[in-house]
Image 1 (cartoon, rainbow, N blue to C red):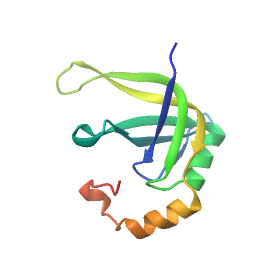
Image 2: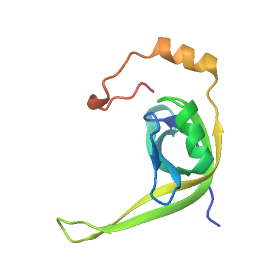
Image 3: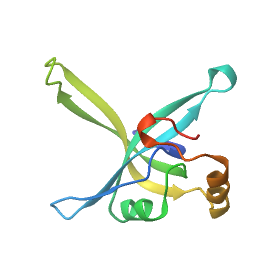
Length: 125
């Protein structure tokens, strides 16, 4: 069985891509809290969303919004140009999408978090 269920916050605003085949895709990264107390950390989970769901996430979601996704784990493999070694990255191929942030949460977050320059890499959550 290959099933991933993830809830996290968008690390950046989604960007929609239109492929030559006519498909629509959005690649996003979710910041997922794990652990607690001194053992708390954030995992960055890459996700790929297709079709109508990609259009929805691009239209209605902004950086910091909470999303729930259900899908399966998939991987990309490639050869590193510098070392010649095979490399692999993992992502969630999303089948189901839940928008979990409310308008009130968005308004509250806008007040709570300062505007961050995206180049410095800091996230407000």
